[in-house]
Image 1 (cartoon, rainbow, N blue to C red):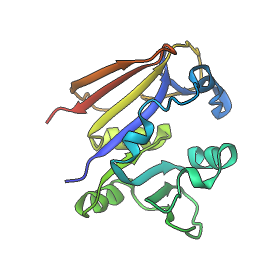
Image 2: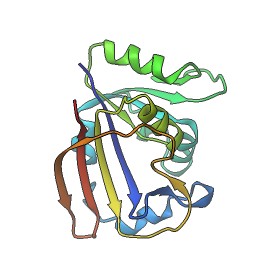
Image 3: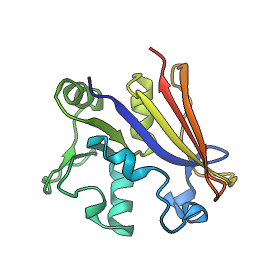
Length: 177
């Protein structure tokens, strides 16, 4: 059975972006030849679910090849119909239906790369199986919260924690069955 993994960075006070979707705080822990396990993680996935705002930001800052590299299917969760681009599908249906369909198919794991709306919709429906959360040593004080209110309580099982020279700490949990 395929699992859905969240691999995301947050500030110590729980924000994944500053106001206006500003991700500049991530530069605080940028270090040459350090990807914080990202490549190792993405080798375990072949499908990506991402919110439209996060997708547009990455498109603008990094380019489309970051997501659509020909190696995986990308589902951009959006309210507006757009034509597919390569292996990128702009999905306007119910997120829970998409996840149910993807989990029933054969393949590697599924990566949820945000944003907050998508993550919290998955959490409301208890659909995230694994949490890999990198905590950046900064208190932002304001912005987009990783975990919004109004979700059911979920007990997680500790897998491991890893610390890095930059001060980043990576927490790894899985959903308790």
